[in-house]
Image (cartoon, rainbow, N blue to C red):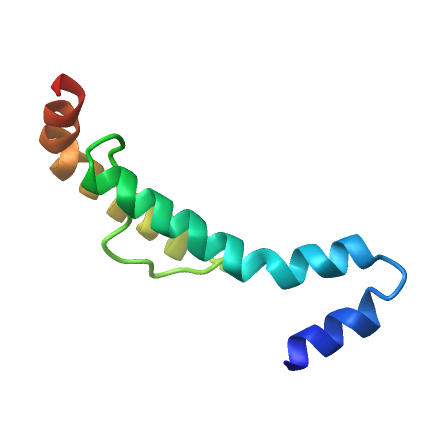
Length: 88
């Protein structure tokens, strides 16, 4: 409720931006539901990180490299699953 009020005030001159920001969570959740359905029906192979030790504001190079290395290790571990999915 507070976000809607903040959007209304901050973007009073930009109603399309305000409306897009307000609709974003519902659109995001619909997309996640669609991805789940595609993965369940094996139409898509969905890759998600096992851990996410950083966020979008992380600038520490060591932490970023650690997250990258974790992702690469996970990719190597899941490669057989990817290949099996691609073979159908």
